[in-house]
Length: 298
Ligand code: MTE
Image 1 (cartoon, rainbow, N blue to C red):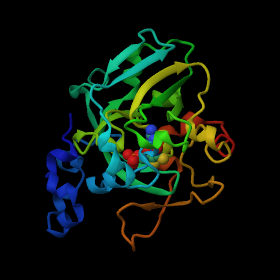
Image 2 (cartoon, rainbow, N blue to C red):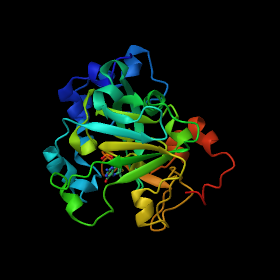
Image 3 (cartoon, rainbow, N blue to C red):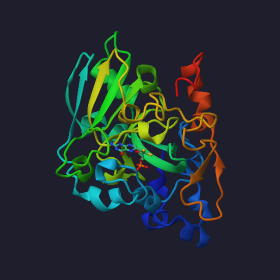
Image 4 (tube, protein in one colour):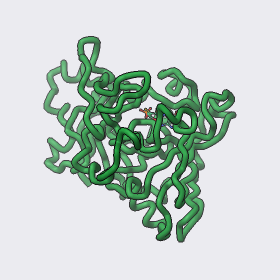
């Protein structure tokens, strides 16, 4: 396993990268692979956001709608014990422990861009396992075409669920080939440590070429099905949020442009960056959508 970012970057330093760089230690601020010479072919070489940024600017409506609500409230969520029910069209349905799905010796670091549909972005050094391996072990049956995901429903610990903000529990879905794509992971950590609750502990989906809302947090159910699932945001506003939700600078949200994005942490003078088709992962994923009209299947 290649060295992880956190293996080469002391914690106090990645907590505040700018101070770190200012201190003249710029060499260590390079991505882990630049030091080990063993890049994960799936990781970006862009500099990750700080742990502070990644854990204090979140969307996790189960804990409230403000970006700082999850950091303040998600600590109350009890994530141990936790199990994920894998069912539907699989040979080995059942209740799986997080350690079974993502055992320590199988974990990989993936430094991915995350582009939210709200037009901000970050770079996050996830730790996790390819979803494909998990599904293979569950034994996907030939007729399965889609994978549906569900977040925990526990209003006592997730105060947002006491309000009709969304149709709880949060649901998402992928086409089977998207789910099996090597870029798609189940993350159980970031910066080399267990996933903070506000980022979707103990296990969440990460699909880097799609808008962030597809990357469902705190998963308790994975169901293989032959019907296209309806995701929470799609059910709420079908004109604004589609099933595919591929990052696409040419298809605007009905209420704002998707052509550019604001990189969190870039500062007041950081300016906006151009949004890339499929969030920059087009070489790997464009073939999944050959022949589709992405303005229609948004
Ligand atoms: N998953 C659940 N269960 N609830 C949510 O509100 N928000 C989504 C996604 N997963 C959300 C969720 C959105 S809109 C984004 S942009 C990402 O989580 C944000 O992930 P992060 O907070 O780890 O950056």
